[in-house]
Image (cartoon, rainbow, N blue to C red; front, side, top):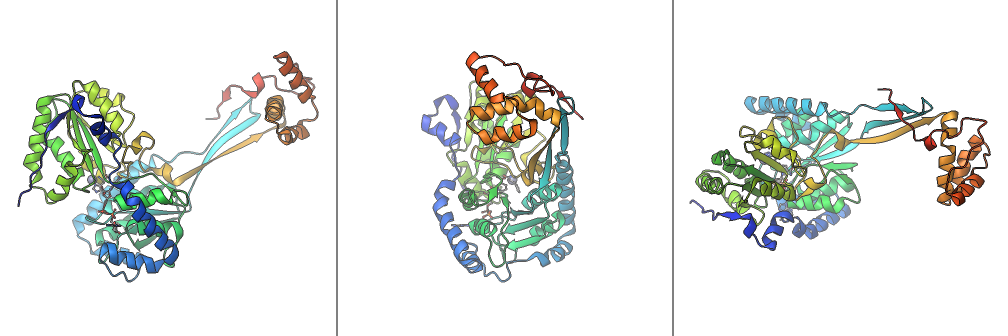
Length: 470
Ligand SMILES: NC(=O)c1ccc[n+]([C@@H]2O[C@H](COP(=O)([O-])OP(=O)(O)OC[C@H]3O[C@@H](n4cnc5c(N)ncnc54)[C@H](O)[C@@H]3O)[C@@H](O)[C@H]2O)c1
Ligand SMILES: N[C@H](CO)Cc1c[nH]c[nH+]1
Ligand SMILES: [Zn+2]
């Protein structure tokens, strides 16, 4: 039976403050899932595998046998449909190529005529956990998006957790084999986040958990933040399309319905400066929605307070709305797309033009689809190679370089009342009456001359121009 969707365009200028807040402060039901997620995390922490099996029974309706299903991945790869295998491999190659360009080089630069050398080096984390969803749909694409950047970064142990299914979906296991995960655990939801954080008999704890999920997975990631590192909150999907009168309403509608089918808590918005385009988008949604297999989920998502077709008085107003919304996916289907992009800072991933559907990035163009939701794009980008690296600074200073910084360091250490810091310099540079001098400098409010039998700080207190070695 066809379901109806009650949708009309809404004028931005006529939204009440509460209606505006529903768009900008959206949380997709995550706050309400926090207490339930906390209970699940406690059970996993206290009871390990026993809790994982009980929770699979309660929330996935599955009797889990072996939790670690790693040794079934290669067989799944061999057995899946050939076209699916080829498509996974094409997508994996594109994702790998895009992420390989993100590997940063270690660097050293010299300063102070080569007397001070500073640098930065990048090393991968040792053990990470990737969550790939698998509740109401299978997500082998999320396996590729989470595992491949970790492998490209050089992470040695990459564990994958995904709902048990009955068994774990074979395409998901095949994707794990292609991407290079070295462990696959049949555990989903908040319990997967708990197991990767605290460890159980079957699951080793990791240093960092990444990946998307529904509101329980997202709530659990928010809860464990103090105990393990996470990427960011990548909850129920979102898209915001900026459309002008040149947009094709059927394309805009199709992009909204695609993201809406992920989750009843998904948020999908079109914002346009053209009333007629807005009305045509609403009509296209109504026409398309009942033809979609997951129309029930789509309709619930369309009815979220953070979803809708919004008409603005100008393109500037539409851009300001999009900035404040900070969507996971921002699609710009307008004549001046690059000019609009220039005015956007807050978006997880941007799709320019009518022939760049969000689904291209979801699967196969090569960019990452694990992206911040609920306004997280105001602070974060999406998953990348950087997510799996730690950076360390390195320095070497020679005797002349230290003498040049001597006065600056000792003066600042003295100003902070940290005498041992000053002494750790002076023990190397020899007594220079720096304290007495700096005190008299402070009193006079000017620079004191230094006793220059060694090259002291003659160069603006050690702040000199860079001589890059690159
Ligand atoms: N932001 C992103 O980057 C991104 C990317 C891909 C997918 N997603 C999102 O991932 C989600 C996938 O959702 P899904 O549900 O299909 O899979 P999922 O794996 O995220 O969630 C399934 C798990 O939820 C748990 N669960 C279900 N009902 C529960 C309840 N009442 N209480 C406690 N736990 C419960 C179960 O343990 C189950 O294993 C969607 O919201 C989709 O939009 C987001
Ligand atoms: N749109 C999702 C990110 O919000 C990613 C995805 C996976 N499969 C299909 N789509
Ligand atoms: Zn999608």
